[in-house]
Length: 394
Ligand code: PLP
Image (cartoon, rainbow, N blue to C red; front, side, top):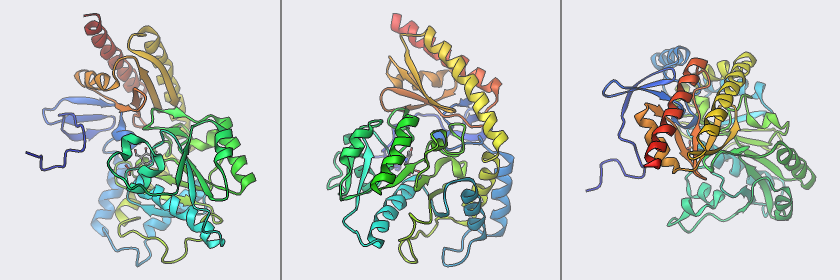
């Protein structure tokens, strides 16, 4: 008999009932070290006092009014995002997929607004992930996501990552925009090189194409800069964010320059809940902490420590691991054993990690995780590898 919850997820049996910083506590009281951060969401860990305070304060005042009225919390968060990024304006959503949807709609509307509605194709990358709506699985094009869901949404084409010539030759009179994740997350922590990103910016400028970045996973301090594209110096015209911005409260946003947002006039887009007072109260609290330069410097320092310790573990367990990829606290360890088996074996060590494509195990811990907790995570990763080795050796 089908379960009352539609069985679309391969869930582990653990059920967590409480969170404290970088730790999750299950129904039996076991404490797990959360090196997956709810898939890059819990940027400030669990039950951060500032976030709890912001949510409780707003909960006592007002939950919802709708976008029929001004929402001061939304305005405050938009101002902060504009202050700290390339963007001039922000549209709020409840999830990442809605943010990439808004980005694609905006790029198409831009060309419509400028009298060129046939410019509507978005070039995306192979192995990319932009969400699960019919349109966003069509953007990725990956068979794993699209199988059985045809007909797909037209207007997307895919090129290999890090190959600027392929992007250049894919651009024609129908191209509206190029859309990329600075590090392909679900695809297996595959970073785009700084050179590719700056060449892509140049190419988009030269050919008059909009550049969309999906920073849903890479953003909000995850790589040690507020947004990952800052490492390359190449800024997008439109950017989708989500995950970390709400620190666990559902929130996303589509940020844009005034130029790129030109077509998004009154009535062109909307959302009942997007930018709700509760979500924006939490988002503002997250943003105030994460956008601080000292906080980001701390992320880079502790991420450097994690990387260094992990490199040693990877080198001493060549039967289990082959390499480490990624930046900051967005790391992928490519495995020689099945990545799902590694994640499962980690549960026995009370360690939470996240599988990704290309047989990678992702480490996406809270950005405020301590050095001691990182040392503990590395020890647990090593113990997991040792367990798998002893059964590998049989
Ligand atoms: N884009 C990227 C890069 C993501 O990593 C994700 C989620 O994993 C999404 C889009 C979709 O976000 P959501 O699941 O919040 O709709």
